[in-house]
Amino acid sequence: MAKGSSYGQPIFCWQGIIYLVKGKGSCRAGLSHNPGLDLTFWRQRGYQQLEVLTPPLPLGTAVFLHNQVAGCLAKGEQGFKYSQVLAALDRGWSRLGLPPGPRAGKLTIAPLPPPPPAELALVREVLAGRILWREELAWALAEKKLGVNTPLEDLGHWLYLAGEIELFPGVGYDPDGRPRCRRCGQATRLVKVSCTACGQVDCLLCEGCLAMGQSRRCRPLYARPRPAGLNPPARPPEIWRPRLQFDLTRAQADAYREAEGFVSQDQARECLLWAACGAGKTEVAYGAIAAALARGRHILYACPRKEVIRELHLRLQKVWPELSLEALYGGSPGKFGTADLTLATTHQALRFYRSFDLVILDEVDAFPLAGDLMLYHAVARARREQGQTLWLTATPPPELIARVRRGRLAVIYLPARHHGHPLPRPEFIREPFLKPPGDGPLPRSLVRGVTTTLAGGLQLLIFVPAVYMVDQVVGWLAAAWPGRAPAGDWIRGCYAAHPRREEVIAAFRRREFPVLVTTTVMERGVTIPRLNVLVLYADEERIFTASTLVQIAGRAGRSAEYPTGRVWFIARRLSPAMAEAVRQIREFNNLARRRGYLK
Image 1 (tube, rainbow, N blue to C red):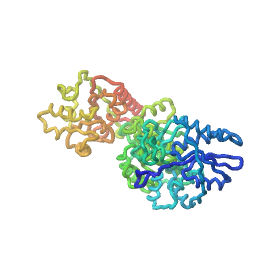
Image 2 (cartoon, rainbow, N blue to C red):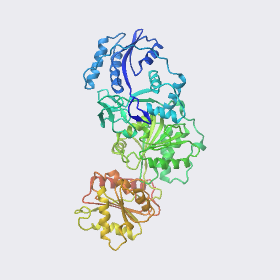
Image 3 (cartoon, rainbow, N blue to C red):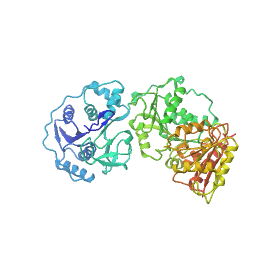
Image 4 (cartoon, one colour):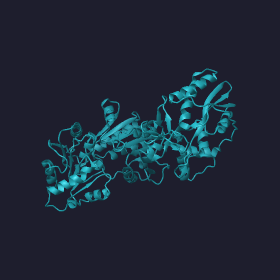
């Protein structure tokens, strides 16, 4: 056991042997932290002799070497040579870049009684559709007010021997010996540490998913696919049909039917719902959810941001009041309940294993998980092997766009907003001598953008590429309007780490001041009725990517009160990202016009 703790309990460290078990005319390889259990299990199946091959090893190492031995036995015929097994072990050590490990000494093994069937049944129940640490397994039992007397690692191991669950190391090895985190799937942020759990000085730890607890080479993960029999029955229409509080627009209704058809026809495994910013993609996804509920499917709605999950939970409770919903995010009260519809952040989705028939992933491109392999790994593993995935976004990542272009990914377009006006097309204003904030007079284009907005009684979001620029631009603008009220009364700034960020944003929403200078922290989740948008230094491509610029432009023109908001890109040059953002917006407007969605 570890000296550290997790979930209020000591971290269980798996240290175990690799062995051979022999019966009449057959031989199998195994691994165990408690070989007395294995001896009992195999004797029940006609195997009598258990021969130990190695001293105790960390789970990640043991699993890799076990696979080498098992592969050697699979290639053999009726019999095998002991020397071949030892050679397979040596090759395994070599692939790990290590010298051959020590051979096992004499070890007396006494059979142990098998675990109680009732306790095995409880572990099966709480592990269905999950992949959990031993400590999380205890947490899940406690949350459901269930208790066992047998050590959980022994219950899990017996079910593993029976082939009912899978056993993974937190950090294991690919067949070529390359280490990889078995929880989040990445192989780049692994570090060697002196481990307080197993006592090894070179234990591998994953930093990529450290926020979800320590994933270590010596720590076991127990996983069980969700049995098909646990799905809810097909529901009558009065339960699965969403109770919308408004009528869908023509564009939304068309996309809704396509999303419904994607799930009902059960032909494509994946589909992209590519929507204009503010077009109502969540409401369109109701079509896919309704079709899945009608067929008794198990559904996950995942999103990177917990704020979205909390808000969506309230919305969906009104749309489906008779269904059970569970929302999982950092700080949520429960983590292991059962529900008709599960909402979860993508981090929380890491705890699911082959559980859902339909996974809906919203904001796949959102910071901080844009392009993060952990996101795709979590979604792919949470979905059943024959399940479906619906991606929702206004700005798909390049890999999804490429698949759409090649015809390898089904796509549903939602190109028009509810008010039927085209998306505001950004205006590029070239300022070849644009200087840093405070260095010389204000650019005339910036002055015109502020003046136009203030004269119209509107509000303005000014985006800058760096945190340090926020206060500089606020001071720059305040100094240029000496006749106006003090700067704090008409212009303020905010960024992700701003100590009063939420207070400043709330005041801007209440229209207490007209101009807000900000970073990309405001590129999503912002709907201000009468708003213009200005991007200063828009050619800073490391920050202002095409997707980011599309999202920023999507803050303008969202309301029927002012659907023609203006968007200005001010820069020294026209960057490729700026050109691509304008192209995407123009394509969506053209598509909406061709389909007759625009007024």
